[in-house]
Length: 98
Image: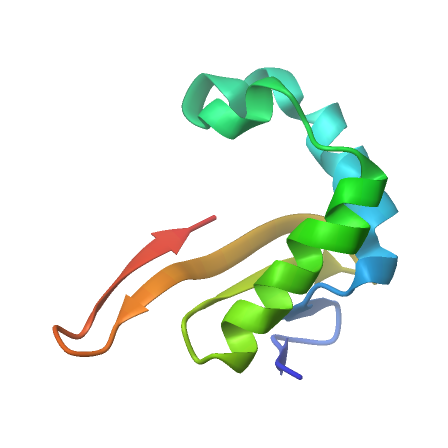
């Protein structure tokens, strides 16, 4: 598992299915702002969809060495995300998301 302890209060780590409720809560609370920039945020997926489909697909992407989606935690509370959406190893490029 990937975990980066930035300082005493901040961690960046892979999201697990148990984080689906916290993720959905943060996304819904910020939906108006997010949907301006992110087309997928017009309709936030359900907790169940994150738990059973989306987060497991992110974990598989990490296991396949093809990028990652990680949660940013402040004082153990999910406050955001950062990730590499796809890694093109041949051309040494990727897309950063946050």
